[in-house]
Image (cartoon, rainbow, N blue to C red; front, top):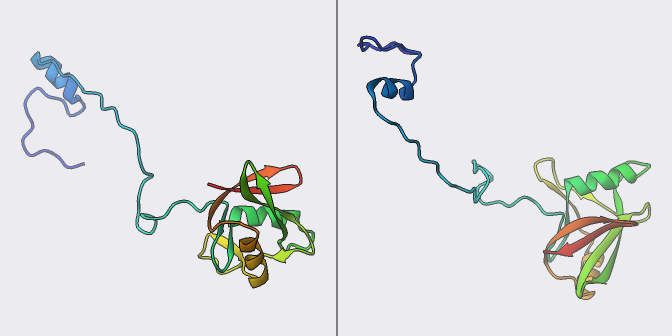
Length: 152
């Protein structure tokens, strides 16, 4: 800590501002600020990104969060995450039901820098689109025999 060049007489370094003002007879009132965070702390690299949802369907691939891919890997005996997919009707909307299946589609990792893995088989992506699944983000819930992905 830097030393003051001129120290006021009779004032201790350890005395707080409130204590100093009380000694002088000045009433100090602190205003309480009511504030609610709207965004998380923004830092370089994540300023415009939302956290990756459970699943994202695009025109060319099905992106799966690493967290879900790791759960499917834990279920795999050989350590290779594979999944079987099914489109269902859930609460009036099309939803994706998936589970680990040793004969299912392999989930690939693009690179360690990405926070998602993907299934990029052209035939399965076309089948999902034809079944009425819309492009977009899906939240994932655990169900009895697998996982349910419902569009947000």
